[in-house]
Length: 408
Image (cartoon, rainbow, N blue to C red):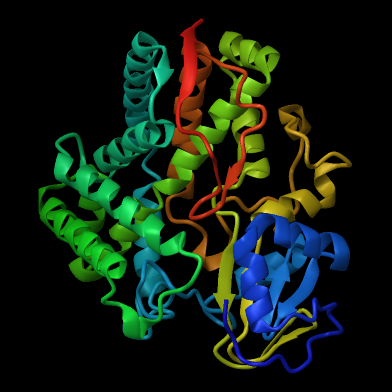
């Protein structure tokens, strides 16, 4: 967290913390610190010098809608600030983004891939059942989702090298994001930073090799053949592969909830209707639990003033727990709340919103809705997931190493 000294927002409550106090409190227990701040000060609070937390759905939506104009994305995969959003050197950024989104709207291709995903997940379940457990839950689900995305992005002949490099990169990324302290750019040659840059370069090279080989019907093939420049395509695909932590984390939470609620699991196994279950997992346990934006100049948004250099933190985790549409029990996992529910804008943002809405959000939703029914139908998850702790070092995951499973 960083930023210049605040110069007076619209009477926002403040913690009164210095920058060093804020950093220590945040790193001691991130979610619990934010929980205390929201409980004591409300959903809009100045955490410290030019550092703000937004847990109100309407203000969160305003910031997300104004990203790239008033608010900037920063620190994307270790790159320089603002390179992950609208890059001034690439005036066709929005046009290219639309190309990527359009390529993902080919329902026949996506539907056919999801049939493959379900079969792929079934094979994983078969292996887990033979072992009687999932030995390394995160690693197994990461392999499942990484191989799924590689096949969808590049076609049936997707090179295993991309999957391998993706997993190496995610491991290196965890060390950077999970570090208690941000590594200054001047110290970028420390061993862990060198490993990170090396892993990112290896992944980008593997993606660069895969792009020319991608099938014409694949997402990357369609984008490539549309004339999209290869350099930004390689960069954006690196970001997409890095986002593999999101479906991995959501599937981990899905397994946790299947173990916590055996009666609900029985119902899902029988009906196969898991849409509301997936939405509730995304609501209560949003993998991207914290979104950061930064102001490059003085900004006023819906009556809130942010000085230049402000860090604005949006938390889907707390937005989803504060939005009135979710009723009086937002901390309870209850999929039936989704019957007939249409959350107002900003109330449900597991994939963000606005011009920088997650490029892979639609794919991730379809993938989750293909995999979760298989997990519910094949696996009976041990109930020892009830007291699992939170791990918020990169995406929001349960602290879960192995998990006992039996056949239904």
